[in-house]
Amino acid sequence: MANHPSAEKRAKQNTKRRDRNRAGRAANRTAVKKLTLAIGEGKGVELFAETASQLAGSAAKGIIPKKRAARKIGRLAKQLHAAKQG
Image (cartoon, rainbow, N blue to C red; front, top):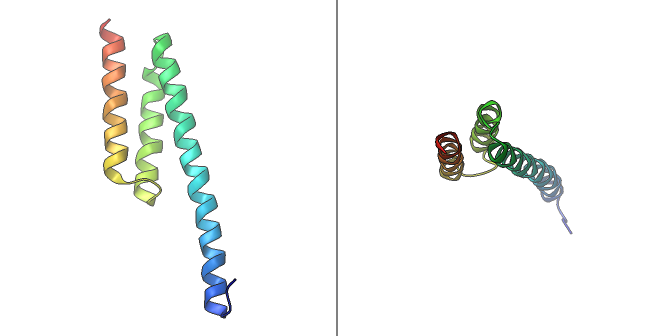
């Protein structure tokens, strides 16, 4: 347990950030899952921009690394394109 006021504040900040980041990662997973299901049904075009924005926003806030967001967006775009073609 924290013994100094600054350490107590730091522990409180860490808890808030952890909860915020956890919620953000869960929202990312939900958005990607919805898009993946929509792509399977042939309706993914509407959700792609929303999901890409969600991932890019999470990267900008530092919830996930920027390169991970770019990789996920690229792979989802590739899935969407492949679903449109065939």
